[in-house]
Image (cartoon, rainbow over all chains, first blue to last red; front, side, top):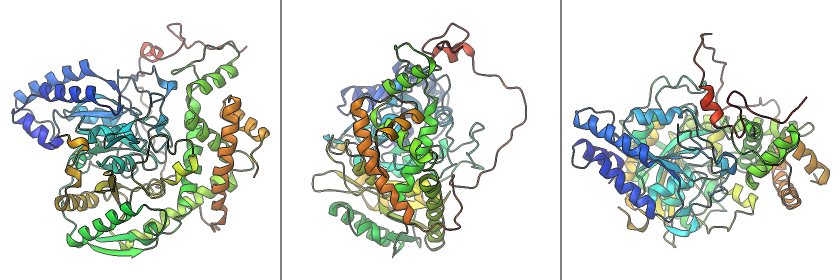
Length: 478
Length: 94
């Protein structure tokens, strides 16, 4: 059952809110995916009784009223620990909720718990967190993708119908592709970042992950509502998605994304999807994506530079981990950070410090910002020709746990199709589009012009009406 | 560019980190590979291209200079590793 169907059943009083919640908790407690870091049982059942009373009184808060949701652990939840999967924040309990969380709670949704991820969202496999790797529900020996691996795995396993993730360089889309779920990375500025623990502030966005595009679109309508606390939130009014066809849409297909370095199963599934869009009334045209070989480099320079600045706040004094080692203030800072942060986070902080340092700033950071401008310009020119771009999400399907985690360059290259979207601040949806020979899901992405989420949702709806990949859950879960 | 012990020590200082010997060795190798790859950016012609630090042009957003309630001090201090009920406790600096 989708989240919208579940809410409709609750609002029609065919099933109780607490009953649904209990069923989800039972599933989570039996899960083998290590997708959850915390459950908020007492709070959730108290909320369930409140929402049930409103339903009984005939109140309608939203089409997702009563639906349980789980939240990536880098999104602040008042009175529920928010650890970013880091030892550094192991004991941190926010005193406020993120705007996106407040919006979904006002819409009558119920926060069930917090989800595992790569530490501080730095990774593409959800293996770098302090609390162990997330396992892919399609094959528990494989990664779930990252950094929102827990968010995608929990939906794929049927543990919860909807989740929130965050996407800095593909962190919603790639785990969706690996786990066979649907996700939306909204335009930069379309969803408030207030309460999202910062990794790279000019790239981060919160977005929904669910079983199909309709559930994700309904949640995005809710979380894209107003925020006074984020100066980069620019929406005049929340999204309203009513179109559901791709008739006459011009879809660009980047020829060079399929030329080399892509698994054949992924290539064939995405090309088959292109034919489905064509059959649904879209026009497909091939083109060569400029700067394909420089996107990853520009992204990692910028993301690491911003990370090195953002993560300087973890000092062992105001909140978070503090070392027992005694010494002067500088020693306390250094030792607390060194004991509290994991290796991938340290790697990115060190890289960021390097590209911002005197003597290297121009060659790396300034240059990356100029390449970012060229990428944005390239997209602007492409969206004069196309309504959207269709591409793979990742070059491969999910790989084995531990296979790449000690090889940062291989890990970083896995982001080749996703990072340019964040550099240009664009929206993209990730949709399941097939399975490889091992039965692991394959994902595609549709990239749109800024604030053109409605077109992406419409095309995604058309695609999911014609295909059934999104209806399948890992292990046949219902 | 060669990543040597001196550069790693400099980056540790800038990053406010104190790495173990094993971490230093691993990160030196990783940074060598990653920065070698990043050097590819130097081949892109960016003459006259302005730097873009943000997806869209942003301007500072001013709000009215009104007094607003702050977060509760006791709640904030709840997350501090060491505090005395009113302030964070830090090592003596003077």
